[in-house]
Amino acid sequence: MSLDRLDDPAAVALAMSLVAMLAVATVTDLERRVIPNRVLAVGALACLAIVAMDDPATLPERVLAAAGAGGFLLLGALWGRPGMGMGDVKLAAVMGLYLGGAVAVALLVGLAAGGAVGVVLIARHGLAARTQGLPFGPFLALGGVVALAVGNPLIEWYLDGLFR
Image (tube, rainbow, N blue to C red; front, side, top):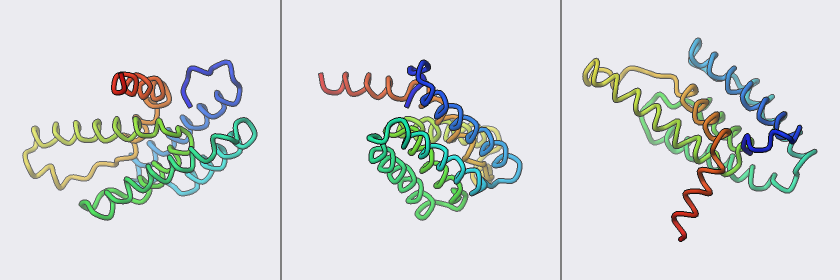
């Protein structure tokens, strides 16, 4: 899914519901350090309903992207330091439903943005900043918006350059 299909009402509905879900997830993660399951469930159901009516052939790819994105962050949550919550894992999975393969761009942007903020905090406050918790949902949401806007064209550009 990308914003290049603004003439398609289903694509617009999908984009609007993704952005609304990401906005609510961001605000609640910033305020309460939690991404509510209800928000993610409603987002997932809205996505599945729109896709099932408009383009059901893409459901397998979307489910695979959701499993891959959620599984990737689950590994980070289980293996890494405390801080990556299950809400982040579930948010990545729902983003995979919406974005399909472009969720890879969303994860890359989210991880890069979060890492950049972490580097700035360490530069400013020293190594003690490593123990400071940051909500990761807003960084994932930023990645989701970037992937929505340019995810598929960016992947095509990369693959074209890779396989020339």
